[in-house]
Image 1 (cartoon, one colour):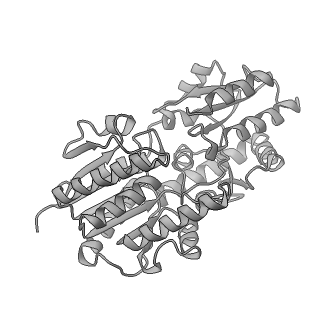
Image 2 (cartoon, rainbow, N blue to C red; image 1 turned 180 degrees about the vertical axis):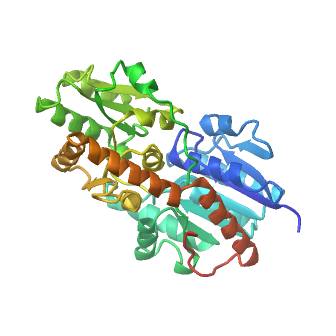
Image 3 (tube, rainbow, N blue to C red; image 1 turned 90 degrees about the vertical axis):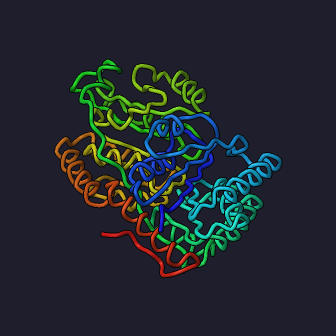
Length: 391
């Protein structure tokens, strides 16, 4: 058999977790075995990362967008179906909710034998209206039955998929995200912020969008700073950009936090800066398996995070960090105080987190798991046993 023709499809080409997973998967797959095409909305970081990447073709689909738009969505579906029919892919692998629905339907209409969807966190959550949840659930159930495999990045998402019947159980798989160990640049972030080595720095890296709840991070910072206990040497940095940037700026100005809480903007080099923080946080309202926590673990940092999605599969409470209920300011402050008061505890937890990242969340393991999945689909495209990550 010649090369396996694989299309990787994602909605947006932004600086996000799903895009990073796709990039590392694409660059890690064996080019002698797989011929790879990536399709996404025009422009953006992912297109730039892949430009010039040997053996990867990039196709930009102008109709793809995050928001529900009947006319654009129909145009994207027709465009994708024609493209898939012409190219005769063996496997279409979809990422992100919109591309997951449209891509799987287009692939079935085009007669693609292997159809894969990676769930980077289900697009169905308790913060949506009942009507929206019902619509998205019906769409996922339909698309799930069109899929050869539906890959969850966490056991939590697998369980949710089973409980809500979002895909046939025999077609659900679990493959945890993996990353290469990022090179660190000691001192770079502190120099940029004008902080000395004795300053305590709490950080969060995320897109400034509602699911990540960046305002909760700022509220937690305000609560800690208002005690006066840390006023001389405690600082906070929020790395990321997005539609809530202006709201975050206004919060900092209104509460007099300038000079204590920094907005660093979107940074592609964020993983290399994490060596300069003392505690990493992520207070999302919902998650799949967040890459930023894995990056913090590689940087040997303890983590305080909201107990949502697959976060509990990354953070071991009391050993590599602490988990708190989403929206629990008192819990977040208490957990951070424990770590800020004890340098040895931070060091011990951080070292264990790094060992865990190297053992379980390396990019080589992820690429191997997806390669095995593709090979199984080629042998049996319409079902099989529930897969688990390789050890």
